[in-house]
Image 1 (tube, rainbow, N blue to C red):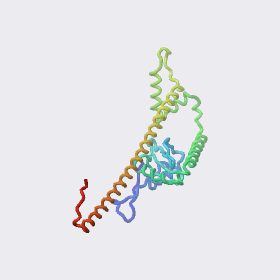
Image 2: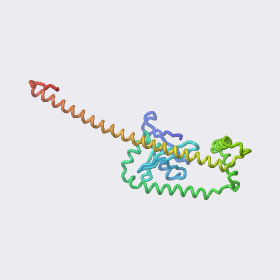
Image 3: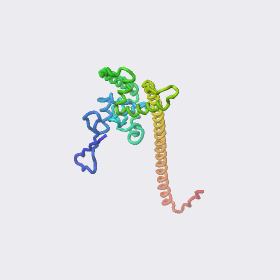
Image 4: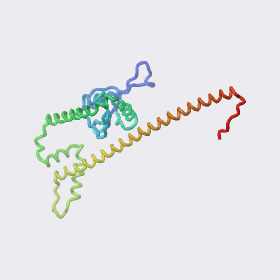
Length: 253
């Protein structure tokens, strides 16, 4: 997604710039952290919610032509990040937002409402877009869809696979579009399972990463406390030596 940089008044462009991100579906263009709110408010029909979830926000994406644009957003406060939310700045935002108890309480209700809203938009779109009368059987539908550049590759591959698995004893081969659609459904189910498994692994990795970060923070705090304690003891020891220079040092053993 292209970005537009706007210099901040009173400062040189080399020092600081506000980066603006345009919406892929309209003329809207503002700071990138405002885009998730804009998408769920004005382009909900373009949003695809990922299977990975948590208790306070959603992971989602939209398609700009063939390019996937991921983001995470709270459906209650409308805040979010143009990031998949699993690593980097996105993961930090998710971790911080998880502390918002009001958003956590309302999340499930807001998510159910949002999914219902998206479904109503899709249904409305399907009703308002009649199916061409030429698509009146499986064979015609197959041939029509194969003219679409987004589908033609996989459909030709399915036709080739069906031909390779044809039993020559059955006679001359004739491609059956019904079997072709069944193959495509098998592919879709297989990739869906792989997709869900992948994101479950990412979610597990993210949780482990957050736990490790918390452990490291706790360890750092403990080390800082020990250093402060050692510094205090060294100062106290110095005062004792100054007050009693004849005091014999004890054997640390």
